[in-house]
Length: 223
Image 1 (tube, helix red, strand yellow):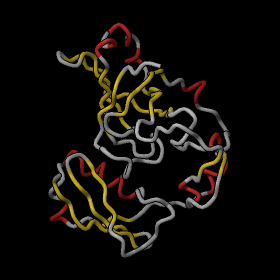
Image 2 (cartoon, rainbow, N blue to C red):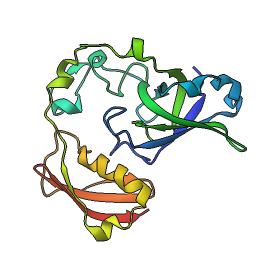
Image 3 (tube, rainbow, N blue to C red):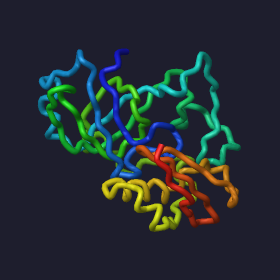
């Protein structure tokens, strides 16, 4: 398996990342190919597709051993499921799969052809193994069942973002950040209203609290 590219996103750590691709469709990403694969001919025809599949590496969760069961966060972290019934990063092979929207393709002098995408659930600098076009007639299955993943409660939060803190975030990133916060980035088994949570987004450190269905941003710092 050869790494063909890396993706650039505003998430240097796992905390704050969407739980699946496409859940927050305004998250921007930029895919930069390795030198060997900076060939525009390899992308001929890709511009006609609205979405693409990314096959990528869980680079932060590699292990020498594996477990047949894992604790999915969406089940509260206290119930085990078979690893192949989940999308846990702790797998025999650290491979992830995400469908993202292809916004555009640009050819640059220093980086060659670059793919600009939306809706990714990948950390900054995640290695990519392969890219394939999304085929609506084959990849979208009508009446498919989502198993235990369909049985979780709606975790959408109301976000209170004080104006003096909101003003620190660039205008082109504030909508994305608010979408991330509203999706409740906490592990589902954590529910302490006094606890201050934090994660990195772009060049900022975001701190917040959650009380029931209400999230309040406590601080915004530049890293």
